[in-house]
Image (cartoon, rainbow, N blue to C red; front, top):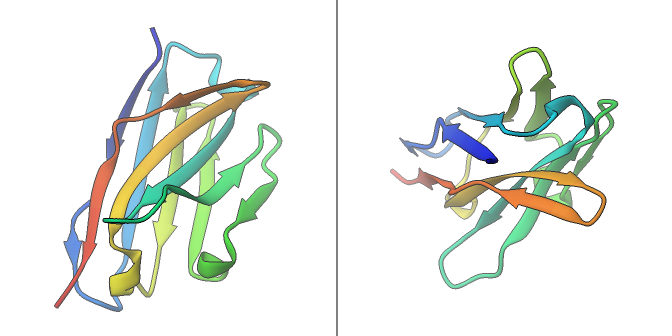
Length: 115
């Protein structure tokens, strides 16, 4: 059974930083591409960042230079470091694991950026 434990979501002031973590189990983590998506209220879910099994990264234009995705295969964990947060970054952030046509989704963690 595939499971994700997402953590790190919080209420933070504009300009602040957060680090999201997603620990996966039930998959051979090192062969999966991992990603983070987000969904803001009233908006469609969107890709934030992806990291391949080999460590190549891809970011949404809106977060380039602001967010950093990384992975630790020894800990079966993917991270999203988010800096200079803005109210527009407020959303539920979802961890994903993808291999071929199969994608698994986490339950999401809430990030709220507000003063």
